Length: 66
Image (cartoon, rainbow, N blue to C red):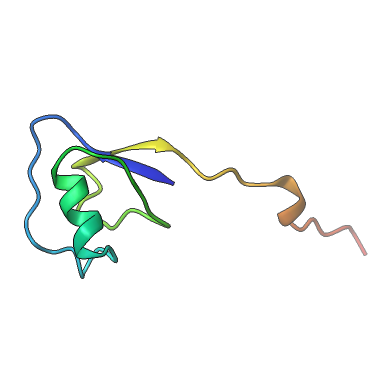
């Protein structure tokens, strides 16, 4: 999924805790969009998700009555 820093928000240097590289973190702080697998709780309220991963109905397993 792609995320971008919300306008007026700032980030500390906790990029390792959030699973980003230093370059991605610098891009995020500069207002650019970065690609991540998930949004860490430390920055969840500071970023906006631009595109959420799509869940396929095929991956959801349905069980019948037996």
